[in-house]
Length: 61
Image 1 (cartoon, rainbow, N blue to C red):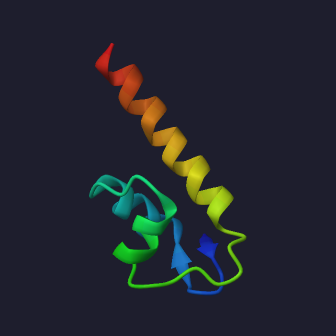
Image 2: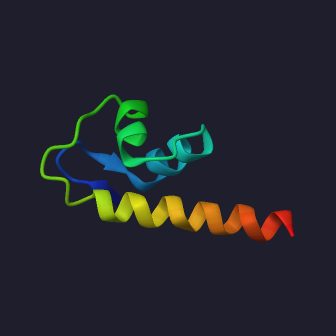
């Protein structure tokens, strides 16, 4: 599934960037060698970042 239609960034690329240490949408764009354009995808990226943080928090318990 595409997260960012403007840059053609797929969900798996976003998740890979997060797994590599990206903590903000700007870092995800940098990891994908892209730049935000319309920014509609930023909310989805933030949601994915939050999901990852929650998963790590529960794993630590």
